[in-house]
Image 1 (cartoon, one colour):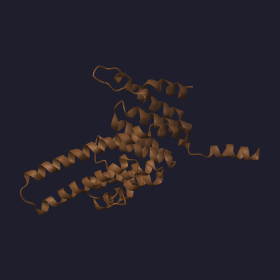
Image 2: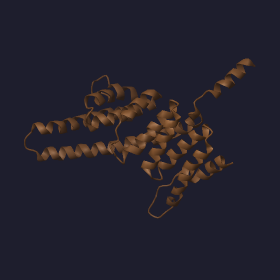
Image 3: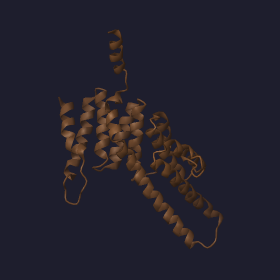
Image 4: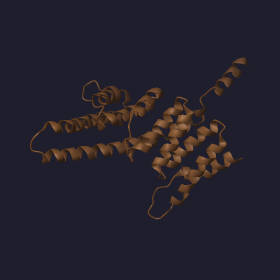
Length: 248
């Protein structure tokens, strides 16, 4: 009996976010995958633009060296992305045995002042998240500078908010997830982040604060089924249940 009570008591000391951990794990591919897809598009655009510029340039000058460094860094980043896409996260981080890929950690170090180095920090954080190494995930996701990027920034903040929650920094998790929802301001991402932040607040007994966030999700109801908008969100459809739960 004592052993049974001890096991029961162990549940009580879990981080507050443990109640919503299954929620994150269920939608991990959507949350993290969305970041990866956006980054891949941006890298492709940058590489193409650099290629077109190089075609128009007849001579190499000293001033062009940084630009070539950016292109080289992004090319190496894409090599690591192939490993990431194959779910080989350790190799994506540290490089493969053939030397084809340097790995995100080395790219982040060698190209620290470039877009490639910045994105490598983000990818490294996502790798650590996939590997359930949450403190390391926090370290690298914090290093990523969104520089006002309206495409990547919300998803990157969402990933960071989840990482904070997994290391029991719940106040930071709530504020970061809320910021991610506000920056995204769309029906696909915002409801997820508001709900995650609200669930953390609920686990802390802060029902009033959770209610305020759940109410923010209601604003996206008007976007469901509106002509010209194909997206829909199961989180928006279920938000009344969340609101009712914290209103009781």
